[in-house]
Image: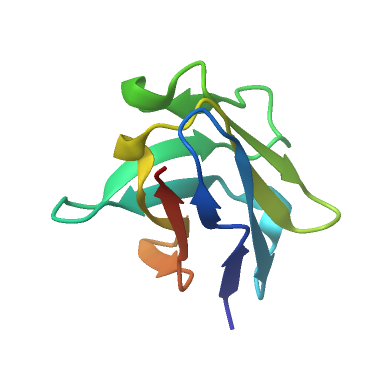
Amino acid sequence: QVRLVESGGGLVQPGGSLTLSCVASGFPFSNYAMRWYREGPGKERELVATISSLLYSDSYINYVDSVKGRFTISRDDPMKTVYLRMSSLKPDDTAVYYCNLLMRGEAYWGQGTQVTVST
């Protein structure tokens, strides 16, 4: 079955950096777009970044405006892993970060990893 396991969260000071990882299994990873979402305290879950499959000529990467220039999404298909490199972190980036797969109309989620940006 599909499994998504996030790691890499933690406590970081404003201006700091973290890299999140999501290891996937149970489906043909390279064929599918992968996404990172986050849910901050008292906020709705929001889409942060998307990376399409790299198998096709129309591959793409998208970011929510609030993280453009600070976050970088990437993928390693042989390792079945998607990454989110976060830099210049702000207190507003504090959230639980989730890896997401949308496959055949069904959404799959990892357990999430907590990122706290604070002094």
